[in-house]
Length: 114
Image 1: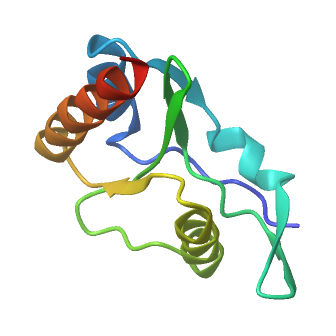
Image 2: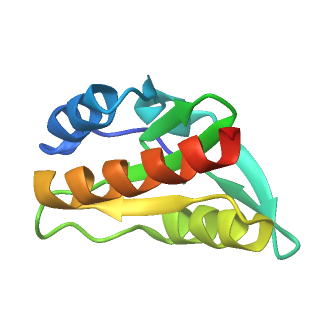
């Protein structure tokens, strides 16, 4: 089972941006140490995104990375599992990306509630 390392330097900033757009932001960072899921017939340990951002019934997984950070194998598998199921999954490296994504997904969430 993978042991979760320290948070990426961007995580708190990214979480604050999503929260500022009205999302309920759940920090899943520490959950990766015990999280497991099946993907393509394989059992994957870890990989869950750092944040789950929820606006009403609409949810987005957000993986936070430092500017030069790259997704790990388990994170890529979790992203693929989300893609197959139509669940929004983002990798964000900075505040500008978070701002753009949060505005876009808030707009999508509001349109779905009409």
